[in-house]
Amino acid sequence: MHAITISEPGGPEALVWAEVPDPVPGEGEVLVEVTASAVNRADIMQRQGFYDPPPGASPYPGLECAGRIAALGPGVSGWAVGDEVCALLAGGGYAQKVAVPSGQLLPVPEGVGLKQAAALPEVVCTVWSNVFMVAHLRPGETLLVHGGSSGIGTMAIQLAKAVGAKVAVTAGTKEKLERCAELGADILINYREQDFVAEIKEATGGAGADVILDNMGAKYLDRNVQALAVNGRLAIIGMQGGRKGELNIGTLLAKRAAVSATSLRARPLEEKAAIVAAVREHVWPLVAAGHVRPIVDRELPMSEAPAAHWVVEESGHIGKVLLTTAPES
Image 1 (spheres, rainbow, N blue to C red):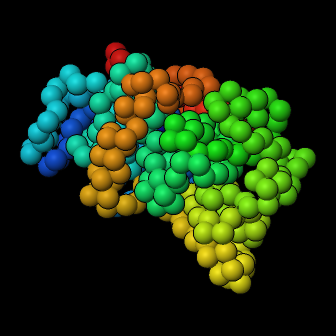
Image 2: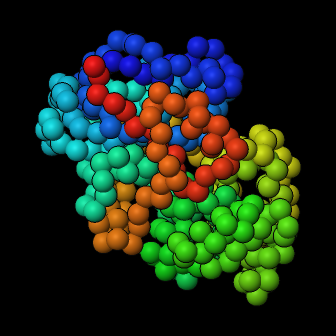
């Protein structure tokens, strides 16, 4: 088969479409013929040499995919060859085939095309696990999403609105804020021109956000705590703004607030399977009903992964950028 390999850490040109050995599904795994994968910030970090795959994972980038089951490994039940699926991966999505633990598979939801389904697993599992399973966003509360036009952001807006929450977003352009509004965002903040702490306070009558979903890390840490409401919860899922920040414990104590930080990739299989099961139970009916949908900016052939990485690195997209495969010749 062919896969995107990383010749050496570096820029997008380090991504090379090359012939590699086919994966073989092990105990409890299935082999998926990949129709599409999607670009995530973690893929960029891996390409740059900052985010190695966990032990035993595929060396190729790609944290989600959609396709058809080609083979079942030992001990797999509940799935059949030919089933159309999407999957949460620890790596290997940028390839024509990938071996996946069966607990990380999801059926392609009703009303979603096979390629478009590749835009769902990573963002849905990230948002559901952080905003709902950890931060426990409730109806009537206010969620602040940084990077509202990203893949994560566009999904967070839709899921929060589906459960009856109010949504605030930050983004860097008028166009991106308008797209967020189309998805249901109530409070639109241009982070280049406005102070999100002041804006969220004004919009909530001085209360602040009950839950904040943050992809920036250190750069926003202090301001995020300032923006939290009493009993607020800050969920950190990225480090685009740095790894180390100063936390005002006094403010946190006064607000009886909580800070959590999680990632999906290196979690044990049973934890990923529990998140995937929760997504299938709670989110897939919303997708089937049309309340939640994948937001796809563009599709590119997987062999053009370098161009896709340029788009994501420059934040020139809204939603997800997909990489599609072609049959082997």
